[in-house]
Amino acid sequence: MNINMKYYIVTIGSIFLALGIGIIVGFNLNYDQELSKQQSEVLSQFEEKFDSLNEEKSDLNKQIDSLNEKYDKLKTYVSQNYNLLIADALTNKNTGIILTNEKNDYSEELESTIKEANGNLAFNIVIKDTIEDSEKLKEAAETTGIEIKSSQDCINYIIDSLNGETAKSDLEKLAKLDLIEIKSLNKDYASYDSVVLVESFSLSSTVTLPFILSTNVVSLSEEFLSI
Image 1 (tube, rainbow, N blue to C red):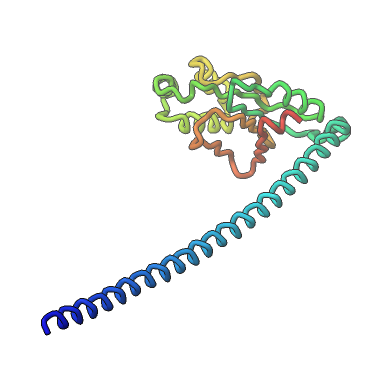
Image 2: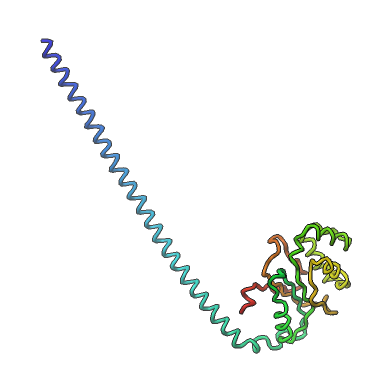
């Protein structure tokens, strides 16, 4: 009797153990299948996104090619019709030039263009890199009697001087400190109609040139000047 009971107990235990193992194996198989399904869905999403990005890249490249083609055509047109385009364009106009980077000085070329367009040069001023030098700015403050603590303060002083009646003497104070170079300053400097700002930029990005609102400020990049 004892032997039979042990037999039944072992048999029943084996059955439950087999069931348990079957349940665990089945669960793992279902989990692996679900995980594989999720991975396939994520991979499919990545592939769709990748295809979408490739399409966007292709569209952008086409736009860039189109813009480059238009730019080349414009460059060729300007080059071939330069004299016709600028002829008398600045008649009775006083134009000033301010260059913000002494290492790339295109001001003489601009002077020539202004003259070829029958215009008058009001002033041609090069702002030197030393305008960022705190010691130089301190000297400028002492020389001018104006509070100049930053390059922006110095720029404001230049603009105020150009709008005043004593620009020559005021700006020469900065020139003597090697903060600017005055290439030209005509007697009618204060009556300028427009200013060409050549931005082959060396100054801090926080520095601005706050011209009076009635003045036209034409900003030229280095690339434009190479046309």
